[in-house]
Image 1 (spheres, one colour):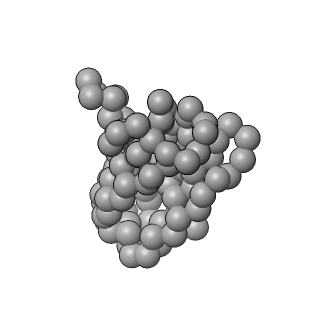
Image 2: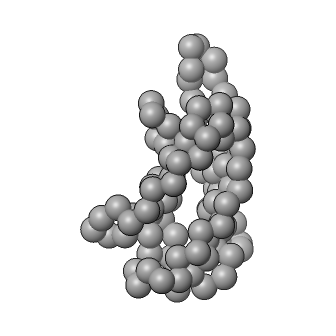
Amino acid sequence: QDGTGTKYKAVEVSAAGNMELVSSKLSKVEDGKVGLTSSGPVIDDITVYIYDEKKLLFEDEISNAGGFTKVYDLRSIPARALTFLVATDLITLSSEKVYLR
């Protein structure tokens, strides 16, 4: 985490013996809005799962996710903190908690 509240996570992913670096970054854009940036050579589809403390709230499938940036508007969700899990069919790339308020 840097001084702006942005969290970074880098994960090494092995596919067919090749080591590649995949990184994702969560940042609070404003109250109730969270930006997710993912970069790296992942060519598979990526699914973003958003959980509150008890259940899955949202699932977002992103095709050919070699790198993407997306802002999630979560102002209608009453939870103070949510967990973002970024995964392919084979591996979890990152899992981070973000505080909305």
